Image (cartoon, rainbow, N blue to C red):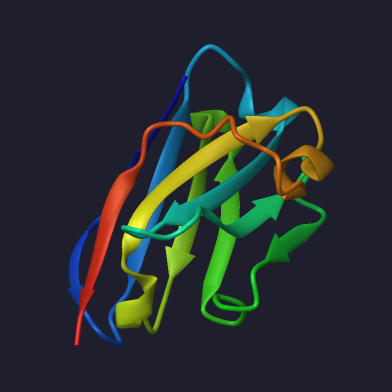
Amino acid sequence: QLQASGGGLVQAGGSLRLSCAASGRTASNYAMGWSRQAPGKEREFVAAMNWNGANTYYADSVKGRSTISKADAKNTVYLQMNNLKPEDTAMYSCAASSSVAGILSPDFGSWGQGTQVTVSS
């Protein structure tokens, strides 16, 4: 089970760090990722990392403003988001997969419970 937290209301230009706790599995053995979905829009990939963190991937819309990381000891993956924009407003969800290719696939659908991020202008 994956539970995201850390969302909230923030002004444009602000920062948030989202957390995703993985229960029932060991984060160190899995690729991890984040996606988001705004009302009325399709789900959008945000960021992913392979099992050991050696490779990271970002959507162009967040590249340079976001960092994905994980703490294996805490079985938790993070998404640090800086310089937030109103268009970042969405429900953010996390996922784990045996391969990062799975998370990067547009057909990937195993996203956990999300946390709402709202950015005001």
